[in-house]
Amino acid sequence: SGKWVKAMEIVKEFEESCRTPISKLKQVADAMTVEMHAGLASEGGSKLKMLITYVDSLPTGNEKGLFYALDLGGTNFRVLRVLLGGKDGGILKQQFKEVSIPPNKMTGSSAALFDYIAAELAKFVAQEEDDFKPTSGRPRELGFTFSFPVMQTSIASGTLLRWTKGFSIDETVSDNGSPFVFMLIMHSVDLFIGRVGQDVVAELTKALERQGLEMRVSALVNDTVGTLAGGKYANNDVVVSVILGTGSNAAYVERAQAIPKWHGLLPKSGEMVINMEWGNFRSSHLPLTEYDQALDAESLNPGEQIYEKVISGMYLGEIFRRVLCRMAEEAFFGDIVPPKLKEPFILGTPVMSAMHHDTSPDLKVAANNLKDILEISNTSLKMRKVIVQLCDIVATRGARLSAAGLLGILKKMGRDTIKEGEKQKTVIAMDGGLYEHYEEYRNSLENCLKELLGEEVCKTIKIEHSNDGSGIGAALLAASHSQYL
Ligand code: ADP
Ligand code: MG
Image (tube, rainbow, N blue to C red; front, side, top):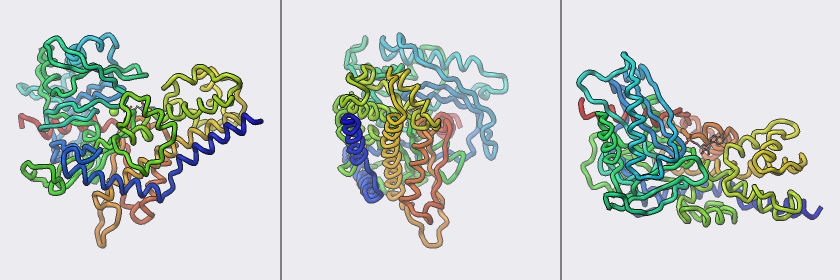
């Protein structure tokens, strides 16, 4: 029928504008490399912030003792403790607790949220078992993983630059008169409060004191840096980390000499970990569609985080919904557009991936999700096949573009080629719910990277899933930057 033809035209056109041939991906990779150089050259020199993390050495394996970590991400808040065995001892013991933040704790002030976190941490500390306590007389130390862009001034301090991943910012005045920022994460159960421009460590430390909990925040690390540290501890060849979760970001080990904007002393190691904040990358080579433009324009941070908006978990389902909605307007689902389909962010990426992974012959999973979430029950198998194809288009583009970004980093590091007589291995630590759970995405990313690198180079590059590396990594960095060694 005419409706079917029209819907197929929409799919075709969308597919066409999402194309990521290797030639285009190489341009994206080159653009990433160029932006990396620019961001390292001067503050504000690029869309890529290329933040200096003050982490100039990664864990060596000699870290010893009991350390805590607190991980504040986009969708979860975790506390953990690890007992590190020192040289060759590894991780002797670890425990963690995941805590959700009740919405009523968020609507007060920034201090109220940090108080809540500190109280949960205090409860967790109170549950220390006998063989899992700090050496007597020594205060507990904490690594704080914070998954938002922070301008650091040392390993244990930093000010928030801005919020990402759909955190909405509402400037108000706090009780002590200083401006603070109230954020809430859109379309998700999570809420979060904080102050742009304020030291997040000072904020947390004050809250810990109010709880009467004696604990030093010895390291403030971005989740990518935590993942890098945790990855390096597990495998010494780790030099890059990538998070593909709600948002996306990457970190890597740079030569201190190659950071013109760094005016401090050269670190002994000669190295510095850089938090790229790669989610904010953009390039004319990115294949963006009308749906991406609309998503961006209607987002809480228009014009920002463009790369993140095509590759990360927060957005894939929403892009998919927008295309489906466009098809519905052409009567794909009958005379009216199903009302649920008009709701932004109603289709999460986990649902999209469940539909994409549907292997049942009649696409039952897709049918059930369409019915349960969108209240669309009259789909034919033929229609569902088209819908699954849409998932594939969106996920494949995202995955291939993240592979291109990775190639950009490898190029910057000079690890995209094999040097004569060198047996260099490069391991990339990956983490995040999208990478972990979206198998089609993961496979597509890995295959694409192979394609980009070629068979020979590919043998020297490995992606390793670093499960919860960021929390352990933060604890490890707290250990290596301990104030009591
Ligand atoms: P965060 O990035 O918030 O720290 P995670 O790394 O756990 O948290 O990633 C959570 C994100 O991963 C979700 O927002 C979602 O986009 C994505 N995700 C989680 N489960 C799945 C799934 N089964 N399939 C696809 N994506 C998923
Ligand atoms: Mg996270």
